[in-house]
Length: 106
Image 1 (cartoon, rainbow, N blue to C red):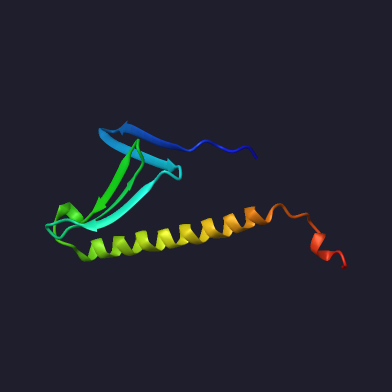
Image 2: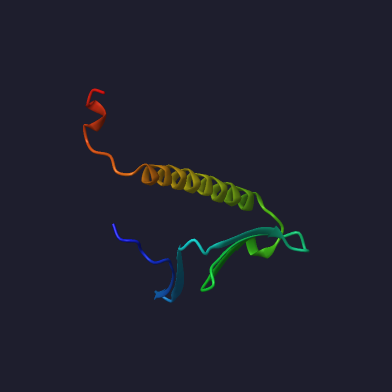
């Protein structure tokens, strides 16, 4: 498999009068920041030199139960992403395996 170059892909689609933005970060150059603003509003930023995505509380206002639920969903998805990255990295570092190789007597 050839190595692919890192990229950030941003698209805008206008459908039925609604604009949808899609951002794909396929690069290790993603910066991640989570903080709280001076007016007590938490936020999460993912950014590359080409694009940035920010997630914050509903309407930029006080934290709601829905905001807490979304934060849990983001946390759980990030944990799954970490687990998958660690597993695949370990598999790739181990190199390819040949079918039946484990069955050969030592």
